[in-house]
Image 1 (cartoon, rainbow, N blue to C red):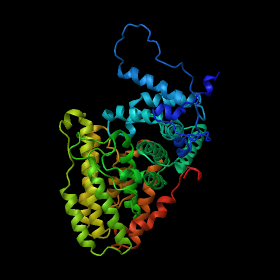
Image 2: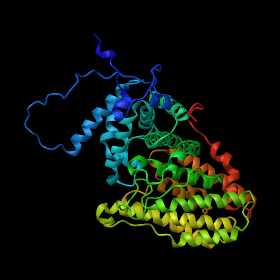
Image 3: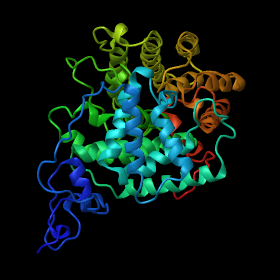
Image 4: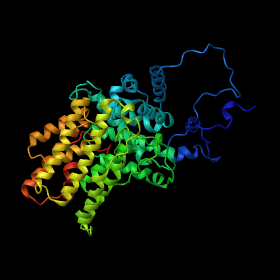
Length: 469
């Protein structure tokens, strides 16, 4: 008689994804686990075949959102059993971050996006717990909860655990292969969590992480004729925005050109870049122009700059119907502020591609002050500045000559400063290096020369060990 353990059945991962588990007769690992370089296990309990009997019960009331969140917390904690169990403190932090909107809001444009973000995290962890758990726990450990003292919230044990798990997550990213949309969504979730850890510790290697993730997903992303489901692209915009803006500062070429949602889609507002999705391709074009000018391969730079400037001046976001009704007043303020400052930053870059820093200063200061005023107003109205505006803030601060004022603006308006003092130190270091070079060679440095100061970005202090990045 054959024991039930000898019956063929799918591995735990394919079973959770409800996909066919294919494997060669001589192999101990299925095709999907082999491709993702994951351990192929079938450890779930055996169940009797056939339909399970349905017990009689009285229908209860519909679960509230809070009850659903609590159930999901329990489910998520159950996922973190392999390969390394959570400590009691880590389990408590994971539990808190899933329930606490104030923690999740640190990375999003507002509370209206929290449920969608929470659902994305849960679904990705459910699909690939072994792949994502270390990255997620590292993120939870290194990011302070709102109200925690930024200078002393993390114990040595907590930091060391974050390092260890971040190193493990990066190793998984390096060995990952992306061959379909499900692999793509898992890769984006893994990269988004690692990027958060890197930004928390200063952001020195943010460009490396973004480029590696986007290189992995690029073949699948660009081969899709139709749109990839929105739910599978939850972390894409933050990675594209980070890579593109870092490339602008370092005069490099981005890996991926973002493909915005179709205009006739259901009024899409992104949780990170809001209504700026259609602006990202033009920032990509600015990277190409700046890179070409640095390397003297731009044949007609003035004509290209005229063209991109006219496009940027005419650009308007696609505002969905009932936009003001679907979001809070604070969220509307921040989303519209983000639109304005990112557009102004792009135009200021065009100005500095035409004219060196220090020349045509009146027009440059007008645009920089406009950005800073918009951010200050948004903070007064909404209580905080929008997310994903730190690049626009940097562009504006490049025009401020006084070091103390630059530092004050960075610390006051930065969205990343709320959880990463080290990111501000890195930004201040770069600005100081650029202003020093400007004073030594006035009216010589153009925007595309910023790439010569890449060492001031990569060489800034970081508490991350070399094994992570």
